[in-house]
Length: 290
Image 1 (cartoon, rainbow, N blue to C red):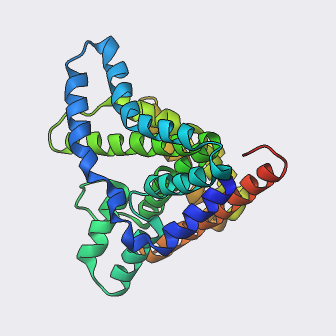
Image 2: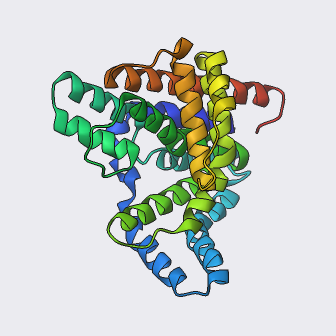
């Protein structure tokens, strides 16, 4: 059932991506702002619990509907509901479409649009032109947040898992955005999202290795040494980015242009996703995933 829902969700997501702007879920921003403001008023020991509550409240309806649809009409309502939840959990924007827009802007000489999309991918307001490798790294990190984390938790816990991961990423994005406007950055939200990303990011890195240069990818993994003051969530992002770039940089040859880095990274993400689907299909065949 999960495999069918996963394949349907991914196919529909790629087919009607232009109709899914509601996935950006901006109407959650006010809720996150209010929840974060209330959590900041709590003592340090209770602030984490407060943020967890903010995270789980939007997940509760998905839990209740999933339970209500189980074993009804041969699970057909549950399948439809799972596909809908998956569609809204992937994103908030289609990564392939965004990379395509970035490449088209570069091809057409629209530097302003290319720079804007590059900043969105990197989640930064830096005005300096990013290096090609930085664009590739950003795509690998975004793939974790938009695709692989959602797929992993969907396979593990169905619609509940996929939606929980998406809400955590939306909460993280919102607090990160507010911190750039002078607000306080929440380490708790980064920690929660980092825990949810830990396993899927490393499995995605394995997929990059399989889909690209295996030896170069694992050399990059072994050689990565996090800084002493590097926070736990950032370490996960950096490992995924390093392995992805290693798999893309065959023989140590670094993509020299933004076009080569972006297109190469997106090809690896697509190959890794096919690898994941194949593994899930085999798990389903042997009864390890339902």
